[in-house]
Length: 302
Ligand code: GDP
Image 1: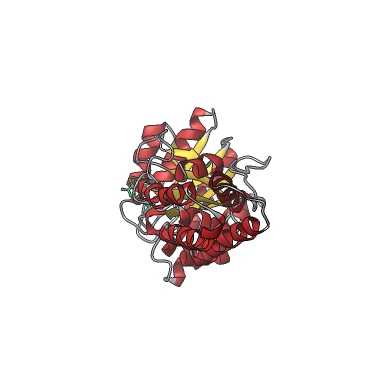
Image 2 (image 1 turned 90 degrees about the horizontal axis):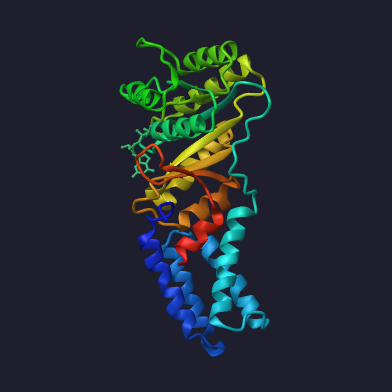
């Protein structure tokens, strides 16, 4: 099981749930639920969700609906799954009917945008999709070269515009036009990721979106926000800001093979109401997987 091999810390934190519930009895409920809430908190579920989950469990226990430790554990897993899927569980990309479909990838530097885009190109190529990459991170010097390496690795065409003052919006616009003229299925657009506090980045992303829509009014079809899973709950404010400014359609959570805490996945989905579409589980071409909420829940509560 490669997909969720990385949540060892989360698994360890949540293993306490099993111990607690093994000897659970009604008289013990308050203490057990307090400890359970603590376990959720240290796994980055955040205070609001941790409280909400435990409160629902308490209600069901007191109402006599949950009568054993294992029933409580199943209810716990169900409520996490529900939080992850209640806002829609569409991990499929929504690419519409007009070609090319345009996918923009946004997020702060170092989160894994370029890498995720390369892996996504690889996935789509395997499905027989004709992919064009657009080197829209005109700010970070090495970003275009990095994307060129991915283009080569996946046998994809790429649009790079040389020059110092090239605007990202212009690169994306050229790429989408080329995609349209030359019959591409999908144009995958990289963007810049200077610190999210830098307002001009947000302006640039809005300009990119407009430039793309000028060529194809229904585009971009997807704007995927790439979030570094190891940043835990810290990802929330930046995710909110990106969503407010550009309107995010899906999430890619990266580095879930590392020290990511599983709870933040639930927090960010609940907070933004946006589905996780893909998860990054390593640096190789095959290490971008469609998000499977059930497998995720089973993994962290295994
Ligand atoms: P960008 O600045 O957002 O474009 O980020 P990059 O794509 O350059 O990625 C930053 C670093 O994170 C690189 O060293 C990537 O190899 C690494 N990285 C990206 N995704 C993953 C992942 O899912 N797992 C691991 N372990 N590393 C990743």
